[in-house]
Structures are given as C-alpha cells and as structure tokens.
Amino acid sequence: MASDMVLEALAGRDTWVFDLDNTLYPAECDLFAEIDQRMTDFVARFLRMERGEARALQKRYYAEHGTTLRGMMTMHGMSPEDFLAHVHEIDLSPLPHLPDLCEVIAALPGRKLVYTNGSRRHAERVTDYMRLGASFDGLFGIEDSDYTPKPTQSAYDAFCRHHDVDPARAVFFEDLERNLKPAHAMGFATVLVHSKKDWSHEPVEARPAGADDVDHPHVDYLTDDLTGFLQGVLDVVRPEPLRGA
Image 1: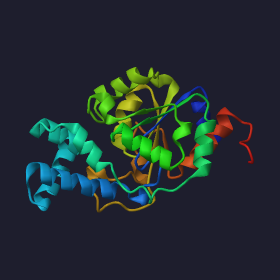
Image 2 (image 1 turned 135 degrees about the vertical axis):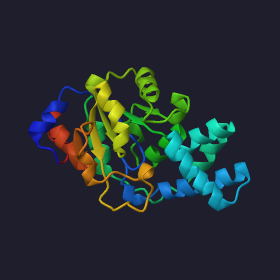
Image 3 (image 1 turned 180 degrees about the vertical axis):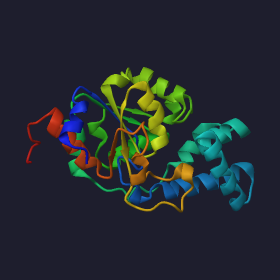
Image 4 (image 1 turned 30 degrees about the vertical axis):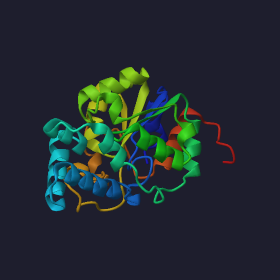
C-alpha cells in the first residue's frame, strides 16, 4: 500500500470515481464469466451463428471496438437495449457483502460516483446487492455516453459533463490500466485495483490487472485491497477514526 506521505497528495480531492466490475468487488468472484457467456448467447442468436463462431466474433469486437456492444452496434446496426438487458440479468450470489468497504466509501469526503462500461441497471443491481447503493451519489452507465465505452476520450468527457466533475479534484479507480490513461491525462489521480489471481488464460484486452501493471506513467497508485487503500486515504484526509475503529 502507498505510504501516508504519498497519499497526502489526495488530500485536496473530493470526487471519488469507481469502476464497477472487478473494482468494487474482487475479480476472483469471476462474475464476468456469466456476462461473457450471455453475450455469446445473444450474438449467436442475433446473427444466427453457431456458438463457437459467435464467441470468436464477440472477442474480436471487444478488441476492435472496446466492447462487444459497440461492435454489434457499429457492424450490424443492433439496438443496444435488448443486448444490455440480456447480458446483465445475472446471478449476483458470487458477490460478497463487504461492510468495511461500505463504511470507508461512505466516509470519504465529497462525492462518490460509479462509472462503468456496463449498463446503469447493472450498476444499480450490483451496488444494491453489495449494500453499497446508499454510499454513492450517482451512477454513470454506457447508455449515458451514447454507448461509447472507456477508454474513448469522448466517454470521459461525457461523464465529466454529466456529473460536473473537475478531474483535478477527483480520483479514478479502475481494474484495467488502459482505462486510466485518458483519466490521468485529464488530471485525475489514478488508482489501479489489481487481482491476486493469474488471469493469463483470458484475452489480454479483457484480463484484470496484475501487480506488474503498475509500470505505467498513468498509474499513480496500485492496490489489491481497495478497502485497505481507502482506509489509508481516510487516515490522511480525515484523521479521526471511523465508528468502532
């Protein structure tokens, strides 16, 4: 974890922006595996393909367009609503309840926002299930950026306009280091939340970050323990202890 001296650089920041999947919950939950399978099912049905062919196309569109959704919209004129409703209607039981995380996020000074490449409804379901919903002041889903995904610059611009965010006063938490590059260039302080598991079997574009991903100038902080990192931030920006600490 970063030292208190390093974390003092965050003391003037008052907007806390969190990615959703594999950031607010550990990548080890592997929740995306069900979303991934449901995307394959949708692509196969929509394009009347064999499942193996549909999966290969799905992965190619993810690499080339940033999301399978954007690829399907661009290449096949697909309407996004049915796709998002289908792929995000998943079993949330693998998600943990993390009361300590709820407490530290609620205690952060200023606004707390979720910014996801998934749908707003998906963000609502996940944060409510994890009992984090009340800790956030706003949710920004892919539909709010006209279905343009991170790391496209216009998506970040849309997010900042929508929530009146000044990047110079904000901190951006992500599990994909490439999504931090535009944020860092805009003035956000950036935190890469990485996994403890080896995800080398996954395509590079979709692979959760590892400890070696800190070696990028657009990554200011690296952690595999979001709760612990935020507690360290609170020790700097709000020295009084949390209730019961």
